[in-house]
Figure 1 (tube, rainbow, N blue to C red):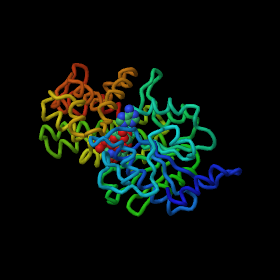
Figure 2 (figure 1 turned 30 degrees about the vertical axis):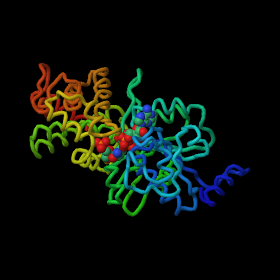
Figure 3 (figure 1 turned 60 degrees about the vertical axis):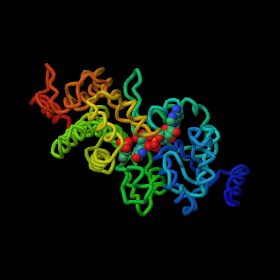
Figure 4 (figure 1 turned 135 degrees about the horizontal axis):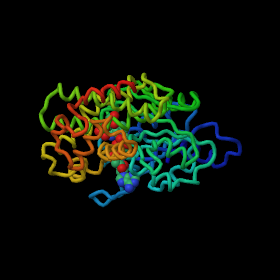
Length: 385
Ligand SMILES: NC(=O)C1=CN([C@@H]2O[C@H](COP(=O)(O)OP(=O)(O)OC[C@H]3O[C@@H](n4cnc5c(N)ncnc54)[C@H](O)[C@@H]3O)[C@@H](O)[C@H]2O)C=CC1
Ligand SMILES: O=C(CO)COP(=O)(O)O
């Protein structure tokens, strides 16, 4: 550890008055988690209001050469498994111990696949104290008995801290190579804290805009993964660009309608931010959900998503298949299935109840005449928009 890093830790340990500098921990170290750590690390070195060191919690695993991933990251400054070939920054310190990784931080960045967030929050419950702020980069949601729960709400409720979100058209590998992109910070409380997150993430190649609509921003990031699965089916069936564009449009419309039904405060303008239409486009063109769904359709639905995910993504995780199931459960529970034909159909294809080409041909006895839905459905959705 460098002298300045040692000194800043010592200052923190000795400090009797409140530390004027913020200390950041990134909880998660997959491909996006590692890129987030790289962005933050470059800014932490430049900005006087942040400590240099950025901790990154790593879900420990042993690599094929027998070395622990954490040791490799700390030795080489690269995440050899999830982001090979990219230097994270000398001030990123990988830590396999979750509680240790967060204990000194007052700014927590959560960025793991959404299915692990419940367990992470349970482990951290009661362990976070003082003035701590959080941000979630996690695209997904939990479905609890009482209904859907956004990951930012899960973090807030379980850990008793405020939580913003950062979503956007952000394919990790492209940002790792410092290609220009935009992102959206969604916030519900104070604008000041949103500005602090914007400052921490922004670089000349990563332009971040704050939006006062935490639920809208998070639901965009969550629901677009279902649309990406649908466009993967279209690609796997070689249906062409017009069909793909139609699916993206219908998907965006269902995203907006469901977001507004769940949270009437969600703003129309949010869907025109990076987290909305731009993320739909990038994920439907170049994301992992699209790619694996294409392979699923090419296999005629014979190979399972689990098998394809393991084979094609090598440890990285899909979010869209789980989210389609979670959304289906929510729609079913509330009697809204007919209002969301695209979301409902994607789940039923994923579980083998329908065939991949039903993404455009699915008709059920009650309602669907085309992918756009019958007139009464079009009316019911347009009345929500
Ligand atoms: N990769 C991308 O391009 C982007 C990803 N996101 C979102 O970021 C979130 C995190 O995704 P990535 O960083 O891409 O991860 P990833 O899919 O690249 O990697 C999977 C991660 O899960 C970890 N993991 C495996 N088992 C675990 C367990 N039991 N408990 C906790 N962690 C475990 C692995 O160690 C690894 O860090 C997701 O919600 C994703 O949708 C958002 C924008 C871009
Ligand atoms: O969220 C993403 C881009 O913004 C990444 O999407 P995938 O998980 O489909 O790769």
